Image 1: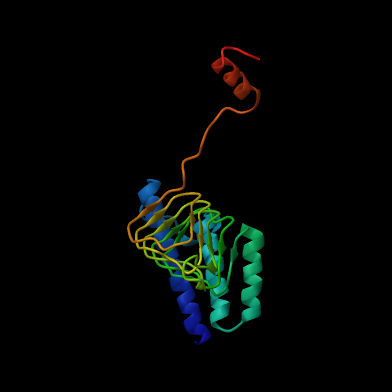
Image 2: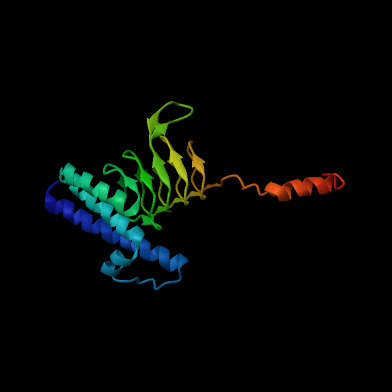
Length: 204
């Protein structure tokens, strides 16, 4: 691929990411569906900044400037606390919310219209049933919630929503909802002891 072709793909991908962000904010934030100028959003929207940095890293990779891609990867790590490999395949038109603390493996694949929240992980691992090693493929329109961890050669089906805090190691059918167990709330410390005493007739 020539540098001109690679740069054209880079620009098109950034514009497609911006369009996805504008649609997201219009749907969930009640903002103007026309959006702000792309330059302004590059300054103000952290998730969009992160994606643009990823696109830059991929540009360097596509023109076989691996050292520059590695430098871009380290900058993403230090600026956003996110570890995204230069070989990770993130399609144009993805929405990143906040963008901090993400970890995306080299063999992970993310399709268009996917929403990735902060602190999510798409990690390489071994499948618990087949023993195959790989990383997740998140299909079109899926949502990966904050702090969700997806590990191994699994497929997150189209339109699926992974709720915050889930750990997923097996494939999920399209248009599913994956929820973590509900948190258990109980009294702690001295108050718990007092409650036990009251239940036993006030004995101390």
